[in-house]
Image (cartoon, rainbow, N blue to C red; front, side, top):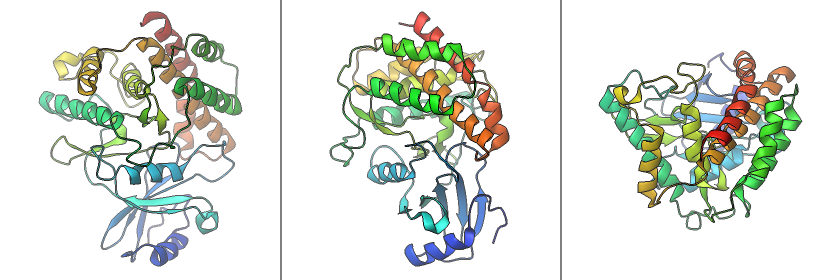
Length: 344
C-alpha cells in the first residue's frame, strides 16, 4: 500500500470500497494527483482495475463550494451521451468514512495536455485536437437536460445575474486585500449585463484543454473532467472561458496562447473557434461577447482568490501553487475590465 496518502485515510477507503463497490479488491496503491487546486484527487490502483477517488478538501469550506455530489450526478447523467465522461461507480456522502464526501469513478487512460500550445503535437494534430474540443463543447450545450434528468441541476432565471452575485459573495468571503480593479469589475458586470436571450443549457464552468483526456494515440476526447462548477446556465460562459484562457501568457504559468503564431502552429484564431462553435449549434453569431469574456475573467479571479485564502488558512491542496496563483487575481480583474471596454 502506497505511503503517498496526503489527505486520505487509505485503510478507511479500502474497507469501505470492499464493502460497497462490487468487484473491488486490494491490495491498493494510492497516488495523489498534483494538478488542480480544489477537490483533492487520488489514483487507486488495484490488481484488477484503476479507479479515481475525488473528495472534498478537509477544513472549513465556503458554502456551496467543492460539491462532489454534483460532479458525480452530472457525469452519471451524461453516460452514453455525445459528451465523453468517466464511468461513475459510487458516491459516499457519509463524512464519517474519511472526513468528507467523496466519489469513485473509473480512471480514464489517455493523454492530457496541460497547455493549449500542444507543443508535443504536429500542426495537423493540433488542429484536430482543437476541433474536437470545439465539437465536445457544442455537444455539451446541445444536451437535452430534460431527457438526462438535469432540468433541476441549476436554478431558473438569468444565469449571469445569479453567477455574478454568487461569485461576488464568494470573493468577499475570501478577500485578503483590497483590489480596486476587482471592485470596479464586479460593479460593471451588474451595470452592463445584456438582456437574457433565453438560452438555458448544461454548462461545464471550467472548460479548458487541461480538463480533458484524449485518446493515447489519436485526437478523440475520452473524458471531460472536473465538473465542480457545472450547472444549468448560459452556454456562452463556457465558450468565453476558452477564449479567456487563450489570452493568458503561453507557458506553464499562464497556460494561454498570447504571443503564439496560431496560424503557423495549426491552432485556431478566437474568431475561427467561435465561428466553428456557432456553425455546430446553428447560431448566426454572438452579440455582447466582451461581456461574457469579462465575466469569465471575473469568475476566475474569484476562484483563485478562494484558492489563495485556503493556502493562507492552511487547507489548500497544493499550498505553494495556490500562493502563486493568488498573484493573478488583480491581473484577471484588469483583463475583465479591458474586455468590457474593447470587445463588442
